[in-house]
Length: 445
Image (cartoon, one colour):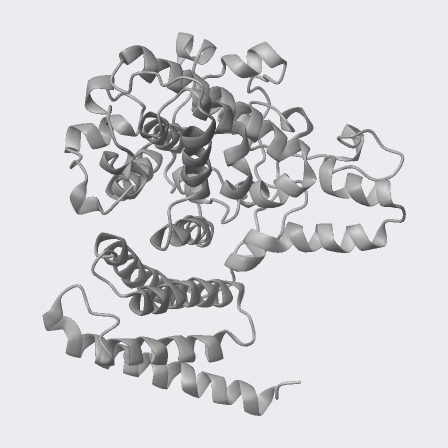
């Protein structure tokens, strides 16, 4: 897909309908891959709008927000990190598909046929089911997918908690479609399948009656995100729950669901959220004797160890009692407000970078990506109350002023440039003093 300005605009009506897979074939059929809109990037305002709506509904019905601020910021940070590689190149899910299509396709179904559109809908959803299932049953694939399950909350922000490197294996499960489905049709459904799964990450929607028989719904997906024993390895569906019913992995929601990993990671640091299980695999791999056992560490289930079944023993999964308290940041209310302000400012630069990426130099793109990553890391350090958080935040604010001075970053409202300079200068002074106090009281080891 090429630059957004060269693609078809998405109307408000289409934007709402694309979130629920309700777009029509004649609206979303394109002859060339370059014509396909970046629906996921264009969905940002709809993500935010639906999260605000969920907040309002939750306040009205339950008198409290649907989740915790620290958890939501961590989820959105993961989503941002997962999108950054697309600033530099087309995703491997598309490049691999195009390669197979150009070199090994058997037939070419018409790109503008509704039959092709609906067949691709089924094909992508079927491929997603098997990818998702393997991402739970193969340890090295779980190392990527566990990011999405690491939240101990369950709300719309949880849907944004995506892995940086999951796409480097998911493409395998869609590749058979490249033998007969044009890339432009595939690219549409790959995005719609992902967008559909956003709205099902909520607790404010209960049972949907007859739709529960066919569609993946919030109720079905709540089970999938649970760490209760009855929830483990169930309901892998993307859009259609029929695959779980056919292949024996369906489980209805009954007792209270407790969310998150069976062994919570208790951190808001984005890189630990993304990579902690890879570190665990590395450690276990070298600690496990024998070649075949080492191979099994990688390619059997996350709960496997020598002498156990492929997927481990269900009785070893920690039992939940329903009164578990999710990990929460000890940051003060004032620091939380500061973090939200900095996250909002970073989000504006993130959106602007995607909107203007064709006009930006590679150096500017790289520097902006580094600043975004540094901001997300610093926010994680602040929420985790890391000892060196003040040092990192001082450096980040200093980097912001330098990037603005050399033209690599610009405030979204030019007239606010001076205000931004004053604000970040104050931040540098505050965090700098805090860093010096820490160095005096607790010298670096």
